[in-house]
Image (cartoon, rainbow, N blue to C red; front, side, top):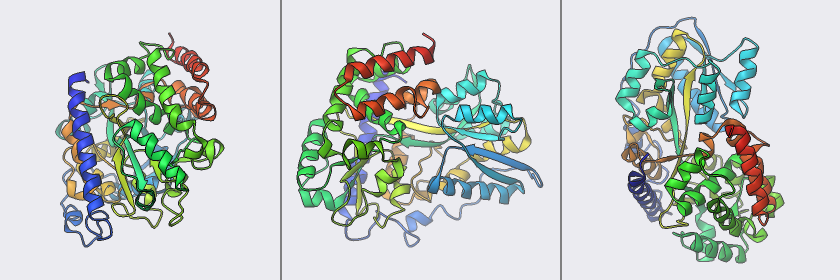
Length: 458
C-alpha cells in the first residue's frame, strides 16, 4: 500500500463518487438512471449470463455459513446461497453471528459445532482464526478463481504468512455521506467539499429546523469510521499506517488533532438528530431510515457511512438518485479520504462443500446476484458493472477496481478484535464515550492507548 499510489486512489475514488452524485442529481425528478429498475437495460444486461464457474455436485451435503449480517443484507446474501444450493444440490443454512465474531466462533468451535464457512469483517479476525488453527487454506479451485478475478492487494488481505485463507466477497467505500435532497434544497445547501464547508453546511441545516446529521452512536463501529476518515485526510496515509500497526501511540498529537476536529461536529447538540443522547441510542439502520423518512421534516439531513447505506434506504420510500444523493467525505487535510472495508469468506472445516462455496464466492457469478440487490460492492474485477442497479453504485464499483492495490483498509478492522471489533470495549466504547463528551480529548486518548497496548501486546 504505497503512499504515492494512495494519492491516485484518492483522486480516482473521489472523482467518480462526485461524478455519480452529479449524474444522479441531474436526473432528480425525472426517474432516469438513479434507481434503475427492470425496465433499465443496463441493469438487466448481466441477469441472463451463463455460469462462469463449474461447481461439484454436493447432493445431500449440509453446510452452515456464519456472518454478522442482519436484515436486508442477510436476506440478499441468502439469495446467493440459494443459487449455490441450486447448482450443487447442497443444503446451506445461514447462521447469524454476533460481534466480536472471533468470540462467537470460538464458542461454536469449543462446543464442537463450527460453521463450515464464516464471513470475517476484520483482518484481525483472520489472523486470530489462523493463530487458533481454525482456518483452512484455500483449495486449488478457489485459488484459481482468486487469481483470475482479484488484484494482489485484496489477495494479500486474505493471506497470513504467505498462505491464502480468505476470499474477499464484499468490499465497501466507507468514505461517503448520503443526504436528503429535499432538506438540502430547503436550506439552500450544496454538498461540501471540505470539513470547514461541512461544518458551515451543518450550521445552516440545523438553523433551518432540520438537524444536520444522524449519527449511529449505539454502534461503535460507525464512530471508528468517522475517526478514520478524519484521521486519514488530516494526518496522512503514513501516519494512518503507523497507527493501524500501533507503531505510534494513540496519545500522539495527530490523534489529538483528529479528535478535536471531530469534536467540532459531535460537540454541537443542535447538529445531531436527537442530540448526543439520541445519537448514542441510535443504531445504524435507524440512522439511515430516519434521514430519508418524514417527508419535509426528516430527523436529519445527512447520514455518514459506506455504499451499503443503499440497502437501508431501500427500506424507505426514498429513491437513490432522486430523494437520496451522496457526496464524498469532505477533505479535512489536503486530500479527501478514502477508507475501504470488506468481508472475507474463510473455511473452518476441511470439507469439499466449504471449498466449493469459497470457489463460488470468489467467482463473478455469486457477486452479481447480490450486486443486483443494491447496497453491495465487490472487489471482484470480473463482475459485470451492469449488474449494479444504479449509476452511483456502478461508479463506486468501477473506482474500486480501477484503484487496484492502492487503497487504505479500515484501521479498526486491521487491529486485534479486542481493540477494534468488540462492542462495549476498546475503540468502540472509547469513541462512544467521546461522543458523549467530546471535550475530554486527553482522557479518551489515554484510554485508547491503554486498550491498544493491551490488545497489541506492546
